[in-house]
Length: 84
Image (cartoon, rainbow, N blue to C red; front, side, top):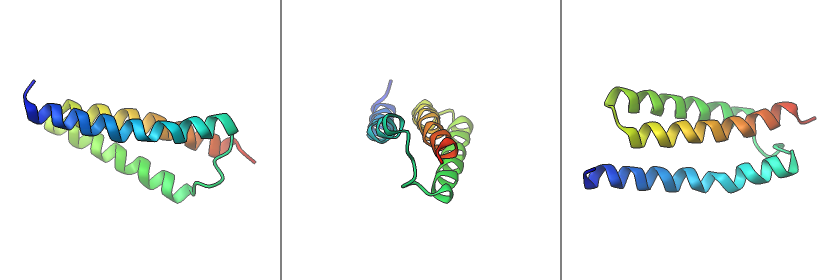
């Protein structure tokens, strides 16, 4: 793997990993009231578009980072929908 792909994988890994503590807190407290639906939906749409871009470019770093982050974001969205 060339250095450019390694750079992309490192960047994607760090940005995705940075999201994990927030997801853990949301799942632990079962509360997502601090998140707005607009932010969650816009963020998810952006992740899906980045994922599509990664597929078109055949770039695993973009695909993996955005797919994993989308799953993490969906966890928060589910908690938001289920919480009173």
